[in-house]
Picture 1 (cartoon, rainbow, N blue to C red):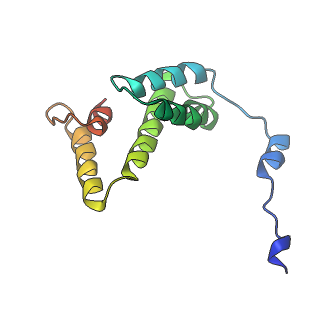
Picture 2 (picture 1 turned 90 degrees about the horizontal axis):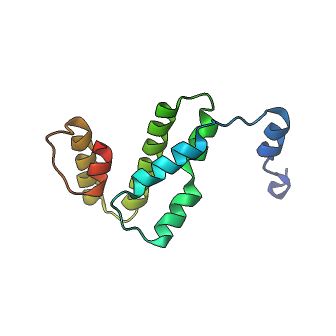
Length: 127
């Protein structure tokens, strides 16, 4: 069999014709509130804002959990946003820096009231 003749199946057309896409009615509200949370006290660049808008975590969460309640969808959206943010900043780190950042995140989650950090990844994890 010739490798050039193998085609990737068009799954979106196949599934789109057979399954109805469902989306949470809370999508716009969770997207808006999560975006405000993400950019709170952060003087971000236009590029960062555009990258966040392209990510659209509220839409992804709303499609994955169409029957979820607002509080649950909001937490899932914030968490997904945080994971993408951490992944993005870790691309510019070496192994030691990533380990330090991971320790900050874990300490912020384990003891949010007494562990102090001014780094954004720690304050976001605590929130």
